[in-house]
Length: 246
Image: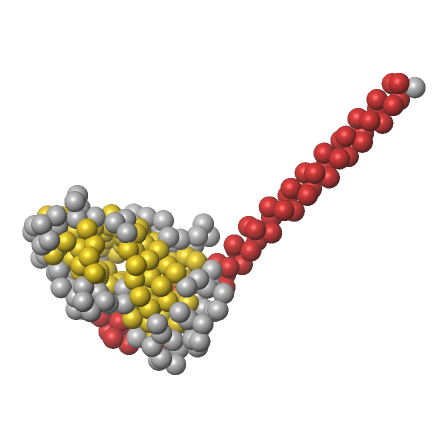
């Protein structure tokens, strides 16, 4: 009897463990599925290109002002007499902006979700990373002045209202707020080495949306209130190496 009881007890334990495994799998799988669906709902490169042409035609025009090149590791490289700009293929890698004189480098990385897709070029100087956040994609453009434009394209009300960028600055450099809402990156002595333009955001009807920055020494956060927007909406910080906002 004891041997039979042990066998029944063992079966019961196996049954319980099997149920526990099933419960664990079911608890984990929906999160991954939700993340994948969120990426799928994010604006595609075609939708992003259309939104930019409709709501920010000046941005689309700037794509014709630069002659880029490409490598196996980089989606876009643009070199001017003063600055070299590199945009990565992988959304987890930083875009870099390197000034030749005086020499310094600034790198900006997007906070992106694991299902974000690799760069797709929508014109010679602009790439799209689809699914960098819930119902949002990011376009990065190399601009003629030797800088980088980061456009967040927001597809719906479930998208976040905060977007983070990791800032990798030269040693002892810091970010300071300008009077007009723009930001400046300055040396330890206060000399400007780069600027981040005052942010702007518009919805699909061309209406301006409330948008501001906050910063730490390592992070730039863009705050955008798109609750009343007609989608898709576009939010746009620009960073340039010339030390003065455009």
